[in-house]
Image (cartoon, rainbow, N blue to C red; front, side):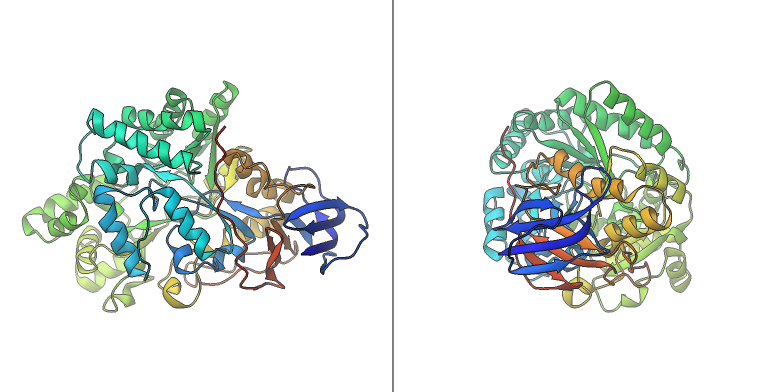
Length: 527
């Protein structure tokens, strides 16, 4: 199919100033860019007054499961995202073995998806067979490797277990993975010491993979956690990607200036460290993350049993308070979703409001709600400050990543009150921060969404507009592009994203999804 995009403001993804021109697409690739391109085309898109960019690459996505539930990737493709990088924060859907299999099977069953794979290659084949609206690249979760080999025990792996983890990662890299991710606030990843992480990450070196880390602490121990990530990259000899970089505690607001300076310093010294960020002052994860690590020792079922033991209640409360990395203001923590109808009315309420209803305290609500919901509770926490968000966004080594999933307003993916980042990350940067606040130029905002993540991953045929590149293209109205999802009304698509082209096929036309499943599974080329 031949497509001609005419008379648009071309922002090519490199950070160069925009220029006016046409873009021709044939057989899935860009074949020409220039003024007044001639020739015929099956489709002509008039882009007068519109910006034409490479398709956006979501460097930090959690769409692993939901793409199997709905391959349309509704909330991402409508943001202009054409590539999702999944397997972040230490958790991937492959490779699976041992104690990782049953919990994954149960998680998928909640969405009506059957587990049909163990290896990464088999998982990628399932994605290809089903089809997706977006391209998909996969990182391998260290937590998944640890569950597969060591289980959920709070101990170091034996030498044999460590070698098995390394071999599983090597096999996945040879099957096309782009790197390793860690989630060091989550068990069992939090049980790993630095030397274990170095040993596993060093497997990446001959494959050219990256080490992407949800670091060990984003609150009171933010600086040591960043130092650890840098040390792992240095010792393992691999590039480092610090995930969703932020100061997630009012105790350390302003410290991102120090961490960003640290990253700049090590980059000047020759160590390849970058970061990503979502443009909001609230974070989001599972409510179980507030529990002390010892409560998770032995796995999910054992954790639930501990919540119901009266003799452990005081110890759990002390552990929750000790682990909390910001002041004891529980109104910052809002329940985003629960699994049962009985507690649906709690969605959107903070822990102080719920404590008032229940006649208890914030930590007690955590324990009792998790016990009532079998652990299936997610939260939104207003833990960051706007000045820090703005400072991180301006750093040249920081790219845009949603830390969100491809959701939809209706059906199983439209439940609860999730973080608006699932729907609004990329238009928010373009509309609010670049256009309205002039915090960064539109060209630099696009660079952070396109060529910067593409080069970080080692993808050479996407992320820029140039002849020969894959035809992943986003066309938006610079005057109207904006996020419309809010914390109280999150299931809302953005405005201003008018056309999205994936591998030469139109996926979004006049702001509406065409139902095209033109995405491809991307595999890392072994260097």
